[in-house]
Amino acid sequence: MSCDYANGLSGYDNKGKCGLPEKFDDEETVERKVKILAEMIRNSKHLVVHTGAGISTAAGIPDFRGPTGVWTLEKKGLKPNFDKSFNDTVPTSTHMILVVLEQAGLLHYVISQNVDGLHLRSGFPRSKLAELHGNMFVEQCDRCHRQFIRNECVPTVGQKHLGLPCPVPKSNGRVCRGQLRDNILDWEDELPFDDLEEADNHSKKADINLCLGTTLQIVPSGKLPTSNKANGGKLVICNLQETKHDKSADLIINTYVDNMMVQLAKQLDVTIPEYSAEQDPTKRNCDDTTFTEWTLRKWQPVQKKRTIPNSHCHITNKKIKEQ
Image (cartoon, rainbow, N blue to C red; front, side, top):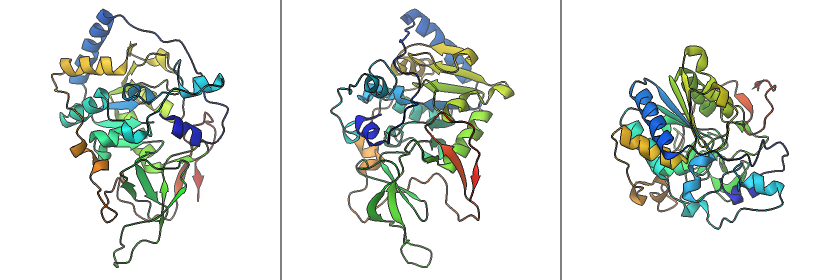
């Protein structure tokens, strides 16, 4: 993600294995494996893609645990050389290929750990996207829980108040009295229940869980791709470092994600669209009187709100709480 995002998080020691060596398949091996993956996808009935920080490095955003990742350098007392803001980045080839694969009916759901907002900005539909850790271009009402797209990235992380009222009128014509917050999770924050529920359902249903640019160390997101194994589903991983679930994978492709995805698009005979600022939802809101929702599903009041433990930490024995 971003140094600004990382600096905004609270202190946390257990950030997983950082700086593991990278492995590269030769181009002939990559080409052979991509052909295998393309055939798997052609025969797939429910493809689900899981995305991590490695799909955004081509946009100039540092990852976390790579050789020059944010957490890797932090352990050495260093910081990445990163002078971009989220506002200055644009979706990569991988982001745009995922859009066209969904439009072609080949991709059924994306589950992202990323907060950079590039899936949103690529035009990927919210109804087919679970954002487990939040989105830098989204604000959320603390009362009605609706989400709204921003023109610029939020100035805070950790679900802090932004000093703005919810813009949505209620059925009686009165404005919701809620206040807007960023929806970026800090280490001890709870996952958004609707996103996690959808992610869990689609991961289990998937005949292929394809993991792009993630070492799968963070729970619960890192466990989702293996949840289809009980139903005979396949696990495919494209990453430069070894992952927590390499032993469970049916296919591992060690190369840059963009390299693999561009070859995959060619094998599947789909044209890679270019990013267009005119189609970017963050560019559509021109003034304070317009807003675009980014709510996963229509929010309805409930008697009991189930919550999910910490999205980032590696603790797995916490129970779901009832309020």
